[in-house]
Length: 234
Image 1: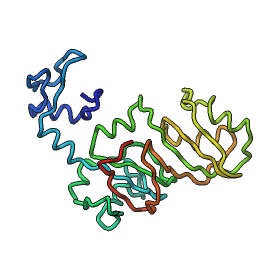
Image 2 (image 1 turned 30 degrees about the vertical axis):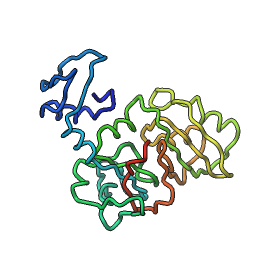
Image 3 (image 1 turned 45 degrees about the vertical axis):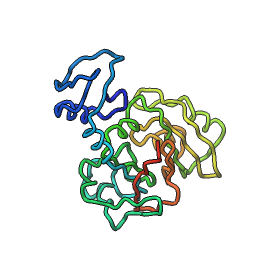
Image 4 (image 1 turned 180 degrees about the vertical axis):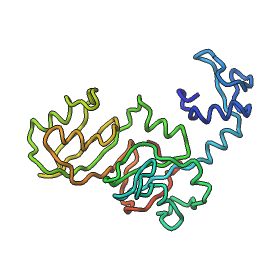
């Protein structure tokens, strides 16, 4: 079910236990049931309504907030989500409700010293879409650096570096001005861009994520957030 994009693995377990899953027209209520790869899997309307009720939040994270587990002396990005910090537009009429915080978690990393687009979601399917090892969704960053940027430096950043003993996927990197680079990656290792820059003699002095897949940060103010609209897709 997760591989087909119907829901997350955790949600699949819940739906199966509730009898909300049919395989070739028959209810399956036993976890671990094996089925044919081409079997028809259908979710009960109750499961579909639950999926539709999940929210996904786009936050412009400031420096000093951690995206995942809290660290001593710092707050989590989730703590910024409230009715006071919601950015509303004519096309974004959904109002904040405390129930939207239940199970809300960051889908991907953005380190404490970085700013920009952070996705928080209740939807396990969206989380998997963004952070699964086989995800090919692009993440775009504007990075300010100190140090000498030459052709050889850019070539190494684009392809040829390794982290944690494993080669990195090819990256799209171009120079915007004398001290700014644009990174487009399809992976997200811990502090990846900062570590990549260190390997070629550059020091990151500022890092901002401006896009994840088809969703751009746009003019969303720092510290503010909005809901992902029903017509928006990563």
